[in-house]
Length: 241
Image 1 (cartoon, rainbow, N blue to C red):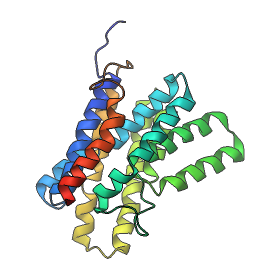
Image 2: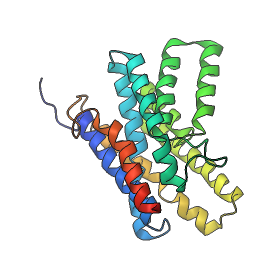
Image 3: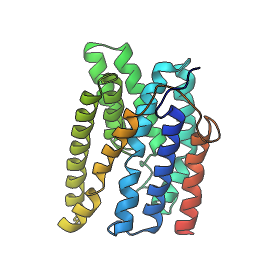
């Protein structure tokens, strides 16, 4: 196969994994409102849009959708306890049991792409609305589904993709700001918790550089699936134990 200039899917995935590790290490060990915390979380905002973009690309090229979504769902289930422990230092209880990880959200994103492709009219909007609602219990609630649908619909039109991506990020920040306000955060704390979310825009140059080739990810295609729960467990133990 002819090698093209730019980033392969494997290189983009490796960058997303690296940014995710920095972000999670920042949540575990660094004050969110410190300059170091801001920098780590700014880079960490690259991960969600990058993996949503790769998901939309993977959906177009998968040979078996049932196996693809099934694999994602299985590892989402395996990541449930490590994610909860990393986030809260506790096993499931009445307060945190409905908090789900990014693989859960990505499973819903895959299903949203399927509904978008296979359904029409009211059935499509009801299906997408239900998946959007379910994503509110996961990581990147609502935004990840919208990111994925945008990347799929805007494929081949980077300008439209970038504009819609910025609007989705802005909407997510407004909703997160309202959540911080309702939780009693001060204006300074709210601003500090929102300041790094424009970092999602840093994913756009990487997506623009994508050359359409699969390439090789770190340690093969299964690396991300196993790395996700494993790194959450290790960071959770270091953070809480």
